[in-house]
Amino acid sequence: YSDHFLVWDKLTQEHAIKHNVDPKKIIPMGCPFFDTFFQDDKNPVNSKNEYILLAIAPFSGMYTRQLSTQMQIEFENTIKQICQITTKMNKKLLIKIHSGPSFNEKIVKNINPNIVVKYTGSFHDYVKNCELLICIDMSTAILDAMLLKKPVISILILEKDSDSELSRKNYILQTEMPHLEKTLTKLSLDNSFKLSCIEQGQKFIDKYMINTGTSSKSLLNFLSNISGKTTN
Image 1 (cartoon, rainbow, N blue to C red):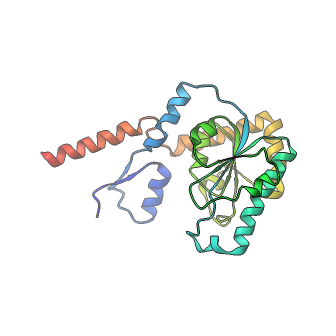
Image 2 (cartoon, helix red, strand yellow):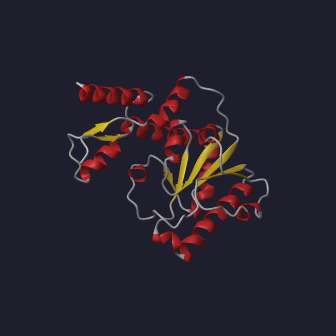
Image 3 (cartoon, rainbow, N blue to C red):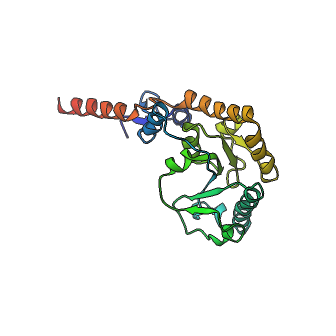
């Protein structure tokens, strides 16, 4: 058994305690990966609103539900509808594919050949230059967008029955496909609504993130102290 259990946010800490991890072993550390996001916030560069960003992870078959024909069809139809709606609204769409099985680009190119599909590149930069993020199911992509003060729309397929803290406390906009166009229109035209959505994301960051911008240093200090104890 481990002597220490490092977690990178308060939500993970609560989850660990809920699953019987000894609270004395849990050390909230933060996530070094996101340190640069907070540096960007202090030293802002030109953040643009060039396109709507859609983050998806093609079903890998990791979960048995992903293998059902019904689920595969719903996933594909959701992507098609998002492409149709954004095209109808004359919005540019960039789709970032998370690592996984190959993605059939014909699904989107048949609707609008100008839709951009990316498999590589900095997601951080894609988020920085987007108007808002649409995320299918839960992903750390949501946190990326929150940290860069972008509105987030979540559409659930696999996780429809999940009781996420993000959704339950309205930290993100969770919607269903029949309401997506209306939600996008409101975000586009109602600046106070857009700002309130961003503020909700900031509330989540403030409540749950730990050692924001300094977690790398915190981790190094922790490892240095551990190393010092073992050599003494």
